[in-house]
Image (tube, rainbow, N blue to C red):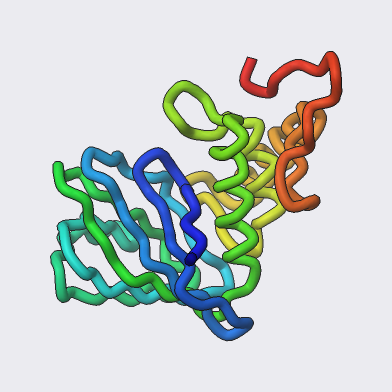
Length: 185
């Protein structure tokens, strides 16, 4: 049975293959999703082949709609967002080259969901994101603020997140010790 991993409340991936050269997943975006944060991949290229449904995508400020049969290539370093604002699910084949630590990143996010370490909105807290984004900066980086400012802010959030028990470098968040408080409190 293939691994299905939850990335956000509206997005999950099913692993199809994973080698050093490429990871390929089938991704499902449930309807009603909102724009994810603007981000980029510093050392990886992405290719999407939409199977069905409708997706909105913004790449380097250019927004367009993708439908079943459409393909899209996102080169490394291109600032982008992809989401499904519609009512019906959308599916695509998503390839990332080289794979790098993408599968590890997906598993770390899924672990947060499986352990219930997400907020009421279904998303990890800023402290969790700080810890995970500093650990996986080779896979994904947020865009918007200048990178030195972004790295500084994430380093601070990451340090606080690790103090609260988020340990992405160990394969997921640390188990709560007896008497410890939840990182979502």
